[in-house]
Amino acid sequence: MFKKILIANRGEIALRVIRTCKEMGIKTVAVYSTADADSLHVRFADEAVCIGPPKSAESYLDIPKIIAAAEITNADAIHPGYGFLSENADFSRICAENNIKFIGASPEMIDAMGDKASAKETMKKAGVPTIPGNVGILESLEDATSCAHEIGYPVMLKATAGGGGKGMQVCHDVAGLAEGWESTRREAGAAFGNDGMYMEKFVQEPRHIEIQIAADQRGKACHLSERDCSIQRRHQKLVEETPSPFMTDELREAMGTAAIKAAEAVKYEGVGTVEFLVDANRDFYFMEMNTRIQVEHTITEEVVSYDLVKEQIKLAAGENISGKNHYPKMHAIQCRINAEDPDRNFAPCPGTINVYHAPGGHGVRLDTHVYAGYQIPPYYDSMIAKLIVVAQTREEAIKKMQRALDEYIIEGVKTTIPFHQRLMRHPRFLSGDFTTKFMEEETV
Image 1 (cartoon, rainbow, N blue to C red):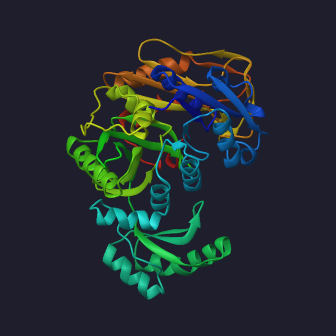
Image 2: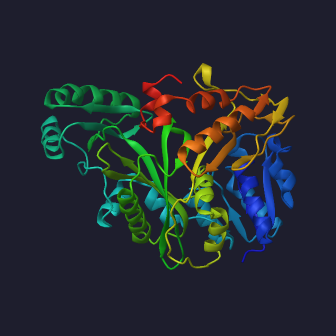
Image 3: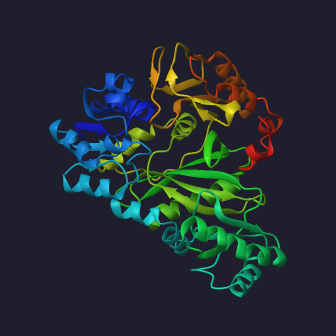
């Protein structure tokens, strides 16, 4: 087992890793920018090293500085958390070159899963369902029409160099495809300097459901069931829950089996998440694999009594898994508390927290690094806390979350607490009848 772990991250997730390390008897090193000198992860680590100014590129993304911090503190492993360098293949490779264990995926694995086209082909070969689509670039409207006929409408035209929602068009019939072909190519060419297009089946009424997996260095994997992440805006998750209100026992088994196939096909090591889109007919399709701990790992921990960070560390140290799958025994919900103004299109609101009161009580967990007097810096992600509840049923969990949100007081900055209070009383959320389009369709 490792003697000392450096946490190459900040805030809530850094503090989360430190807590597990302390329980395992492992020494910890915090790294921090000058903007985070007063953060709790710095206070509670055994050692702390300042690695630069607030700008991420000069601190949390500066690989030489982080490696130097590990060397001067004699850390034998680095935990990257999520975000920043957690899925950076070069960082994983440089850690190995310096005899420091990267607690995460190998560089080859990160590269393989980071390339969506190659990841999709790998999943196809492993027998994991993928969204039907063409291979390569569509050469003409005739090619596109033929492909659409084979796939079946509706279809989605996508720019090969796309991103940010540009160069995308849903086509419901032949006429719509003919109309969208030139306009979508023009938009892609103007935005990316590349008008190459490909096509996928358009998934109607999609839900975003992911399967948590764990795998050891022998290539053996297990799953820890699902999380429903469908409540999101601009592809940013807002609320996660497990089990999914859309799930059936049959679908859970099928998705869990597919996720294990995905992990074992690429000889995955560590904890990770296989993400799927699920349509109204409960057909599911591989989207991507996240080769790191997820923000929402907390709710899985609550329903299966399993410390995923501890498992990450043990797997990185070479321990084996039992191969047993885990299923939810309770219902858990997580609300992401961001320093944002939900009434101004979720505009970031950095500043000083003047008054702070944390909720508590049975079945309430709060993962956060903030406190009264804390200065929220403007340089990083606006998430300042994760509020998690667990109860016997979904109805009880929602009631518990309503109560916990009403108890949660943060003054001095705007937060998403009022948004979550409204969401937890919204009829469609209460019924479980929502998709990834919820925020576009409803006023909360």
